[in-house]
Figure 1 (tube, helix red, strand yellow):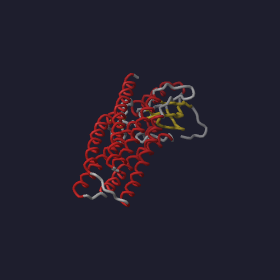
Figure 2: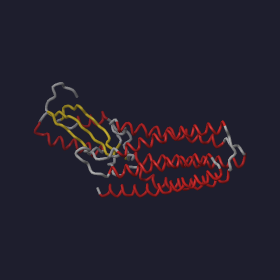
Figure 3: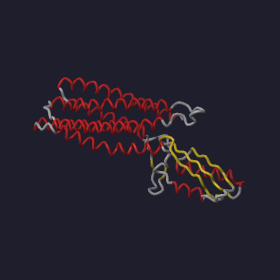
Length: 309
């Protein structure tokens, strides 16, 4: 429990620093963008503001997840992480479509842009974003989860913290955006081809969308309590059936509470009720050590009239 608290505390510290850097750069972009009339910088400032809002939500989600469970919320607020991940994904998708809209406006009504301020501000932004990525990336892996061995690859598999991964994707998208603005500024300075800004913006949006869509699908999959992608339903079922004394299993459900915390419930049919304690201990050992599932509810049955397995 101590390690988990230390990890949570370090995540909050990292996110707070990144939030301050992001918001400070947002204010800087607004001032420079308005002073030189650069739509590109103002648009990128909008991206930074959305990132800042996403980071605030992520910090709130971490704080909520630390609250203890109650009789009304028996799992506590663990799902706050997944809800925040979902909202961040939706923000990123809306942001991508906003980029498409702004790019279209620039193509229809191109305007002259000063390249040097763009280059300077975007370079500072790139440095800030790269620093944020270095700080956040180590925290995207859920260190509180058990190490699992995938049944096909037979190698150690770490699980992604979706909440931190969503924040990481936002910063990563801004990093690509800063690189795009730098490239656009260099093209404008060397060729006066002002449409480069719009074309690169479209490329940035196309780069963001697939990754964001993947994060959105993972969040929705968890919220509808789908089986975790790295845990095979049939494989776990067969592992339980191979326990000596087990003759059947039904109503097997596997789901994710939050990143790194998985749960399972099942009815297990056994031959000899006197060996129920041994069998239950062996099943729990398999689930925890082989699959990293330490929240299991097993109902032992000696007979099931329908014969459903």
